Length: 174
Image (cartoon, rainbow, N blue to C red):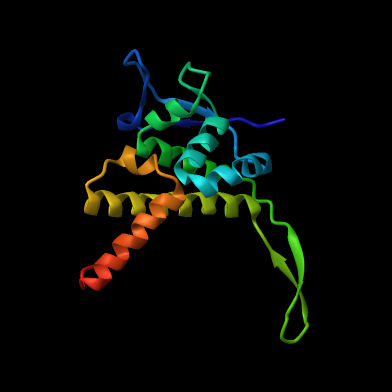
């Protein structure tokens, strides 16, 4: 059974529904291994969609709205998403499984502490931060819109970044 948590969105980051009504309360559960497993292949293809899908899986209520899907998640302001991410990080169980490890140099046995929940949330945050950088770079140089860039697969987006990087390097630009 999943535990649900609430987050209150700051005033300027409310979710605005199709009727123009602002919603400030969000109810969600924390990501789990099933989410990670289900979204792994999507994350390889399109990180932005994977993050949107993760949020649509974890968020169960926005205000009085209970049918949450990717299109609703995409309408969440960036600061609202950040508020929810921060609350998830704060609430992530501090499960620290101990792993026995052996030093490859001296063969000494030692215990390694690993926080899986924090690792998973950090990976999502790193991927999201990287995605923002990629969108900024491509939008700045190619003048493409965010939606055009996010509609690309990771492979296609990275190819454009590689081509642009090569071009800038050849021309001595930064």
